[in-house]
Image (cartoon, rainbow over all chains, first blue to last red; front, side, top):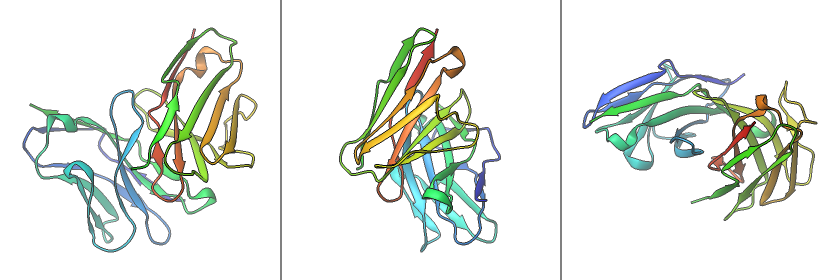
Length: 114
Length: 113
């Protein structure tokens, strides 16, 4: 079965510093990976996806993610954090079984400290 | 970009009431819609998947008679929580897809008194 793991429940970063939110995956075949962000009492917003091609994927709001096949990782990154980036971040993988549904990691809460 | 509208945003009702939540894809036709449930500080738990015109497929442990899902058109799916009880209180989020990625509504906060 396809799965993703987010090893950190919470990440704290000072405003202006680079941020990284970690994600590792376990899939059979080629992975189809996503990052979503959730603000309080809201649904999920799509940030970026990796299907194939360049290992560095650029997404919304200045975020990017690096696909690393040897380490089975798909870490989310941003060069300079903003206070408004504080939110809950979910890594996800497409389950190639029934209906191609998305399976989410447990989420990582990102706190950007002013 | 693709927009998914979910209504209502908040519902507070008495125990025993049935509650209907609507999910609409506003600018695309969603061949597949998904319903998730999220508990505080937890990830999203997939409840069911529905394809337009066919019966929903429920995940293991989700009561299909409790959570009725209808996907009558390519732009509308509804989730009805029947005879709701306090333990059904949660944040319910719908998602719609024509092609990847899935797009999400803003969720419905359901509180059963």
